[in-house]
Image 1 (cartoon, rainbow, N blue to C red):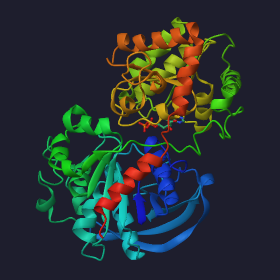
Image 2 (image 1 turned 135 degrees about the vertical axis):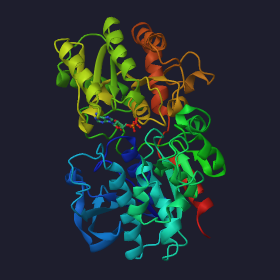
Image 3 (image 1 turned 90 degrees about the vertical axis):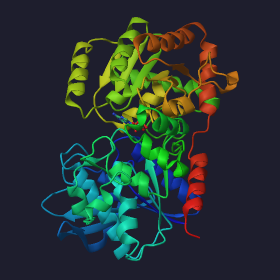
Image 4 (image 1 turned 45 degrees about the horizontal axis):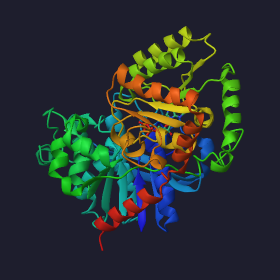
Length: 490
Ligand code: ADP
């Protein structure tokens, strides 16, 4: 099959969170299975150009219709660790992708509506006719809409779209102007409740809703979250649309790329280890302490790696730091936040804890350090308020860092409580709590810290159980192949 992924991120070249990892990891798995896979991305100025090989112009003059005129673009091609990527560079005064950041601008909707249109225009003009177009999140919600309403008539009649939603919270709510911009000028046809009109903001166009309505199949990133999105407030108002289109909606658990996330071969860590050489993990714990100037004492290290977004339960992360310190554990945090008040809060906390030899807060995005943290930490904490899938806990399991998580979304599908899960002991791999409050968090942290000190053999066994889990792309890769087969034109 010929599969084209249209996405706003792809690790490691343009990564903000898990979406980037998914686009990279799934593409690789699909290639291993014999498919031809291309990825289309915006050409951001802030990408990691050191991760692109052989960057060259692929199409010098691509004219993309936009409002009443057209925008001149250049399309580049390069390899990102073997993945074949096209990068779209518009030359216009809007300066869509030269902003030093990926997201967070008032015209984000215009930027990615343009990108969606440009990606399809490129496929059309370059005579590329994929069997499947796989697009991701609100940024590309317009892709199936434009394909069906415009490009099908222009020669792309056989293309089918799989649309994956990684985060329902951000839906691309905007005004009617965006329909004008991309040429859907028969506004009444699209701006109604059966199509792109938002159910709760009747004056707004909802790009994600458009994606759900028009895609041939919509997925979200874990089976539990698929139910949460349909039946609870975690659908953020899209419950009705999901219910109407339930026959083409499902959850596929993300995988992780074990070529990147594997302590046996990880070039970012000083001491490699696996199930047969677990003792080597502790050299990484020492290296982590050296790097972050933590004192060397007989204590577990509990870590948090991730965005500092309200979705991640920042108030509980804050509480976890102090609970860990009070209970004889060390705490390491690696995270950053686009929200200035959250950033400020953690900077204050960092200053407050600066002289504490048991704690380090690194308020940055640092991929290299994240590898060392997974390898050096004894436990990873994820007290998320909602978590569509979560890659952090799957990475932690592979590195023998026992996850302490809230039972929600993908966390529920991947972490099984040591004491209370119905699974056999060999399949239990972490600590789970339910209520998003201090008591809930403390109940799980207490059990984890206590096991580490009082029953080290059991704790080690729990690490081994986690390391044995296979959360690679193998199974989700097959699930996506089944979906593609189901929707493709035969
Ligand atoms: P989300 O997609 O909601 O951000 P996930 O758990 O699905 O959360 O994926 C997070 C990914 O991003 C993981 O690979 C994690 O290691 C990485 N990550 C998040 N924040 C940072 C950071 N500050 N530095 C390095 N890596 C980070």
